[in-house]
Length: 113
Image (tube, rainbow, N blue to C red; front, side, top):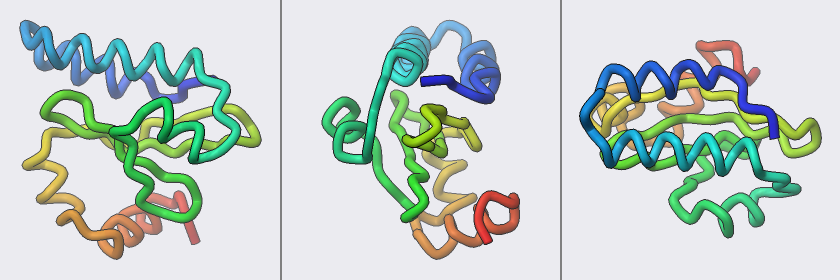
């Protein structure tokens, strides 16, 4: 599967240089996505139990150590796009752990109508 905006994950890794757990978690997520051939959300969740589907159009949060990343996965086109990365405090501040707030964020960023 093609991974678009991988640079966001790599920037997080550089920003937290020395955090080996985070570096390994980011590397694993990248490898998991790029080697994946997921056909649907069930296959994705079976492969990555940390994935949390937060919108019906296949937007997922993945846990990466003490951080999270919001990623769009398009199964039919076989690509994933990293939309947002941050730690749990930034996640709580931005999304408030609330699917309605996530939907508003996605709409404001032109990802859904």
